[in-house]
Amino acid sequence: MSQNELPPSPDTPPQPAAPPATVNAWLVVVLLLAVAAVMLRNAEWWRWVGSPVSIEPRPIQPRGDLAEDEKATIELFRQASPSVVHITSIAVRRDRLSLNLLEIPEGTGSGFVWDDAGHIVTNLHVIETGNTARVTLADNTSLDARLVGIEPDKDIAVLRVDAPPGKLRPIPIGTSADLQVGQKVFAIGNPFGLDQTLTTGVISGLGREIQSESRRVIDGVIQTDAAVNPGNSGGPLLDSAGRLIGVNTAIVSPSGVYAGIGFAVPVDTINEIVPLLIRDGRIERAGLGLRLLPDDFAQKLGVAQGAVVLDVLETGAAAAAGIRPMFWDHDGDLRFEVILAIDGEQIRRQDDVMRVLEKRKVGEKVAVTLLRDGKQETLSITLQGISRSMR
Image 1 (cartoon, rainbow, N blue to C red):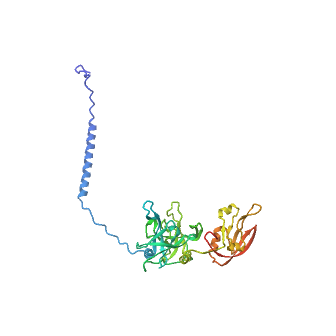
Image 2 (cartoon, rainbow, N blue to C red):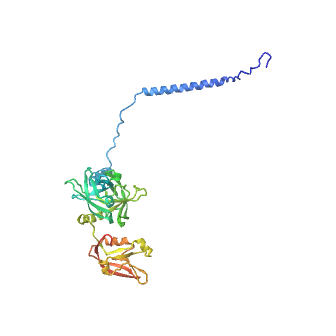
Image 3 (cartoon, one colour):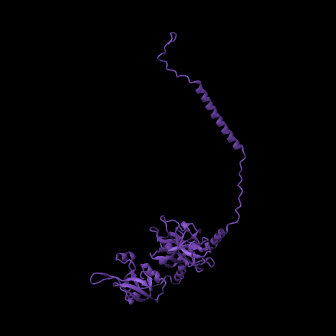
């Protein structure tokens, strides 16, 4: 400090150093660039706002004619869809307070018109939860239906509605005897309540087996990849000619919705059962007049192959031929007889007995090969009409 300078006062705060001139210059440059960017942006925006904008629709590109397979599918749907119906299963219950009868929808499914007399074919599991059913035609006409007959072993039910003449269009009937894996198929139904839905696919397999509502095996079933979802049950599976070749019945899916595998009961089975249900209201099957032990219990007895006889109807065909029910002997040993074959066809499990007898009629004679007391023996039995609990 020079002699002429005074020392700073203790009450005066220290003054910051002046910024260098180069820093001030850079701040000015950045500020100018920011202002220029804003001005340019505003200029572009005003130019865009001021420019003319087209508000006319874009011209449509002509597509040309539909492909031949598209035309065929459209025509198939037009012809077949009037034969497909929407079925609502209804439970009739009494209100606890008002004591009025209430109609409560229990579920929905599909079906199809069988004939001009008003017979409707569907799956048994579509209607079994309700007391009655209502059928909605393709033109949205709603009709009350009454039950004609059921066949639980095939999951088939026949309903009947009263419709004006000409109101119903029966579905064309095909055959399932000559189906081939890979041929096109079409399913029409009401999945998730969406009526008149068409899905397409191919036959993925033939001769499959699924379990029916009565827990009996349905054999000869058609497997398809045409989308089949809840609500499609009871609807028709069609070939490319629009003919009925099966009734959509079940799917294989962990989630309960379509997963690429659907099943349909073949039309040849339907065409055999439905006329009998219309005529008699039930199916009278030829049988032996006996009851069989379930396969899992038979295996616990050490029977790996064959059908174990559990009980015999006292006045039935099996009893008349000398077949004995299961019993305990004097030594305390369980004694039973095992059916090994019927007319030479091998019996591996109890469902094989039903499969063989389905081809026979009441009054026919069959040769039944038994394993009795460790020895094989063949008996001639005249088949009788049976109830559903017997065989």
